Amino acid sequence: MKYIVLIKQVPDIKNVPKEAWDWEKGTLKRGLLDNVCNELDKQALAFALKMRDIHDGKIVSLTMGPPFAADVLRYALSEGADIGVLLTDRKLGGADTAATAYPLAQAIRRIQDEMFEGDNEYVIVSGMQSIDGDTAQVPPQIAEELGIAHIAYATSFKFDNGNLQAKRITRRGLETIATLRYPCLVTVTQWTQLRYPSFSRTRWAYSQELYRWGVDDIRAEESRIGLTGSRTNVVRVFSPKEFGQKACVFENDLVKLMKMIKETYESKLRAIEEEEEKPKYHLPESKSTTYKGEIWVYAEQEGGEVNPALFELLGKAAELSGQLNEKVSAVLVGKDVKGLAGELIAYGADKVYIAQHDLLESFLPSHYTIAVAELVEKYKPQMMLFGATPLGRELAPRVAYRTSSGLTADCTGLDIVDLKRGDQELTAVLMQTRPALGGNVMASIITQNSMVQMSTARPGVMRSLEPDYARTGEIIEYTPNITKSDLGTSIISSEIYPPASDIKDAAAIVCGGGGCKTKEGFEKYVPPLAESLGKFLGQEAMVGASRMAVESGFIDRSRQIGQTGQTVKPRVYIAIGVSGAVQHLIGMQNSDIVLAINKDPNARIFKVADYGIVGDLEKVVPELIKVLNSEGSWM
Ligand SMILES: Cc1cc2nc3c(=O)[nH]c(=O)nc-3n(C[C@H](O)[C@H](O)[C@H](O)COP(=O)(O)OP(=O)(O)OC[C@H]3O[C@@H](n4cnc5c(N)ncnc54)[C@H](O)[C@@H]3O)c2cc1C
Image 1: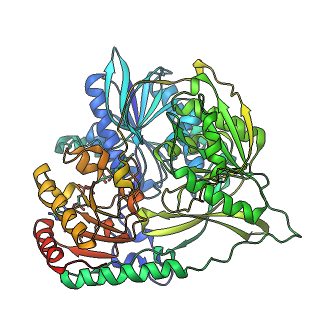
Image 2: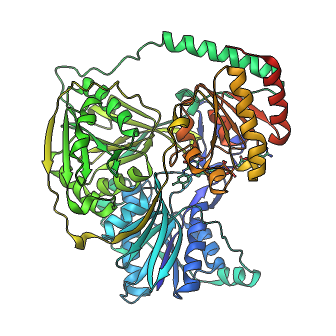
Image 3: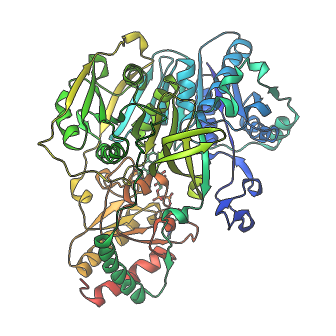
């Protein structure tokens, strides 16, 4: 077996020096940030090294970037990689994910031909996403370009009679996937068995020649690289504060803090009542839109159950359709899923396209990509929205790549605008706004040189409509052209965790994280705080947990909040010892009032918190319980 590890140099966004902020523009001066190796790529390298312990073979590390990105290849060599390949050329600059995936795939083709002598028995391993762009789009788009299988969110692996099997995280639980042929691509998350290089190996790494390839060396078509080959374009970068990021108030006087929380709660209620509609885009009669066609929403379902994030997308699509005078259509893919169409219509779809096939019973990205891409090519919508869910983040990049469409990941804002770009007038195009550089900046992006404007949208930030089961709509059935031979992987087993409906509707939640350290620690602090909070509010407060707390065995998985757990919207959310990883925030960011307790003043959770206490939870929580128990009811 042989291995190619994709590794990326990224700015160190965890340590942003003060001078790197441009306070006037509200943006980051990227040149003033240190460069480091992307953390998940380090995990990917360690994953590949572990694979090699079992199945010996050459490891080639590959990166694309400026000449100084050679540093990450030296790191890979010192860890155990055998060869380093640096893809570097000015012409590659300014690339979006599609224009990055293509040259990397070309480099992989050359590695196969020359370094592996044409042998295709190899595994490509990379981190799930890079911390700067955070799109998770490049690996699936490389897989699409190479026509190979992709196993996303892998957490462990084994070889069964020489065949690779990987365990992966899904929204509903865990799956074990087997590869049916090589090469295949595995993206890694949460692999903690990192290695440390020896001094002599590091010296060896720095004495090695790296392969330096330019655009001509990989025979890349110039129309598909750099800015020219990019299908998305950043229009504006701005400070998240402009976008309504919470300004956390830090207060260590707990009595004062609880009084402030009460006042905020009441003023928030008044603000919701007084909220005014934002002015909406209006398409002038004299103009026609740059992109034409319906507004599509991918209707994510697994096991015949739709992902609730879909209803928010339908709500957004209905809002946009009013501005563009276009129909909203949902795209439903699976086996025997027609029964779900009525619900999609009730939530705002005017039409439902249904691609059904026996081979679509479970989600396998290669088959689902073909089904959706065939519909897109046949009916040509002007835009298509997917949920930024684990499934959406695997599927949308492949569909976008296959249909030559631009894709913007993890949007928190979608608006219609008219724009002038150079000598081009763009009418009623989709402005897609998303956090970048770890949430330190916001970027507004438009699609260019594309058939369809595609976005994945973050769950929990858009509003769904009230369902109207009296609505009627059109149903269009379609049989996609897929065969068993299109399959690169098969599902060996899946473990589905039951959802917990009680926590989803809780009015108040105390969520414990990895900071509780042990099951005993969790039980000592989280349930008692929930009980006191409940008495204080005069209604039940429930116990929730981060994925770290769940995976560490502190509490049952049904309590997990986040991207792969529950989405909650309580009136009061107290996070104790929770770092605020983006996958966690997705599940709780719509909480009315958030209080975070964390000993790290730079913890990300404070960015979505209204109130914060910087301190050791073992000290703060007992004091807070005392205050809550003594202040009596406040509502
Ligand atoms: C595909 C995928 C899906 C995921 N889905 C989810 C999901 O649904 N939900 C989810 O939560 N995560 C999810 N994750 C994991 C997520 O990336 C983080 O790893 C996880 O949220 C971290 O949990 P944590 O913040 O509780 O723990 P840690 O990362 O361990 O952070 C602990 C925090 O506690 C603080 N702390 C430590 N000791 C103390 C103390 N004594 N007093 C006060 N503070 C203290 C630390 O400063 C730190 O901020 C997912 C990841 C992937 C890749």
